[in-house]
Length: 136
Image 1 (cartoon, rainbow, N blue to C red):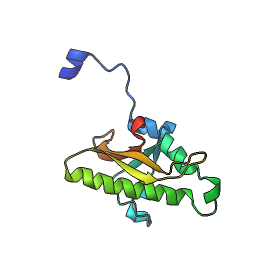
Image 2: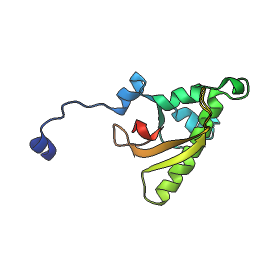
Image 3: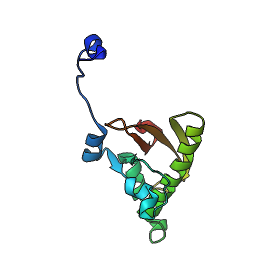
Image 4: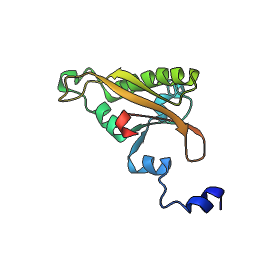
C-alpha cells in the first residue's frame, strides 16, 4: 500500500491505455508513425489517435475520393503532430495544439485544430496521443 492509498484509499476504477486500444477508444498508429515501415511520421515511440480523429481520417469527402486515401490523411496528421511535438519538447511542454488540413464529409471547414500529448503509457514508457482538444 502506498501513501496515496492510505490517504485516498484504493482506486475505484482504472482504465489503461492498453484497454483503450483494445476497445477502440484509441487507434494504434505506431507502425505508420515510424520510419521503420517507410512511412515517415517521424515518431520513435508508440502513437495512438483518438477514435473521433480516426473517424475523421477515414471520412474522405466525395470530391476527394480517388485522390485522397486514409493512409495519406493519417500521414498528414502524424507529420504535423510530429512537428508540434518537437516544438513542444523544445519548450519543455507536454501538450501542443496544432492545425492540419483535413477535409471531412459535410463540412466546409478544412483546417482543424488537433492536440498532440506526450505522456506515459501503462508501464511508464513514453507514448504519444493525438486527437481533438475535446478528446482529452
